[in-house]
Image (cartoon, rainbow, N blue to C red; front, side, top):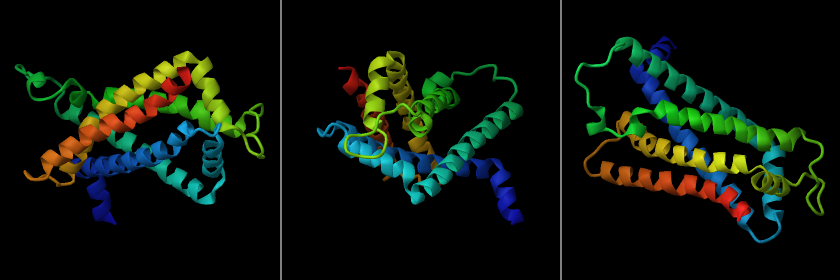
Length: 224
């Protein structure tokens, strides 16, 4: 296993690891958004509550959660290692440097956009996962013996307006983070071809618009 350790601790290996965990987290976003779209079903939250109950009790989901947490930790840790390495190898900026010509602000500041998304994620987990699991005064969904997640989402988005604003702003930052990360991940993994790269770039931009916009419509829906 020595070769594996050396590979994962090398700069190239860490970039590959960050790309793979990034693509894994991207796939999670699609699954999570698909389930959350049940909020918009005109059934007073019946389908969404059934989905939330399944996600909080099914054994296979518990395993998936552990894998997801590991993916997040590896992605964040690897990003920190690479940023630290870059600063150590080039502690001073070049005398003449115009990064704005060849790259966008967001591509040069993935750490900032990622940090905003991380702060939002922790707040999101506290407001929904933690409270749904451990808050005792959440009413039961009509005709069931499990908690009403639809009521919880509606209450937070309508009463705690600051959280709705944070949610929307975080989705904007997530969009910019994804726009660069999608293309960058495929390039790092060696999937770079003049025939396919333009398509992947357009697909990445489309993904970075649709997925965050889908999440952002949730607080907007309850607010209006």
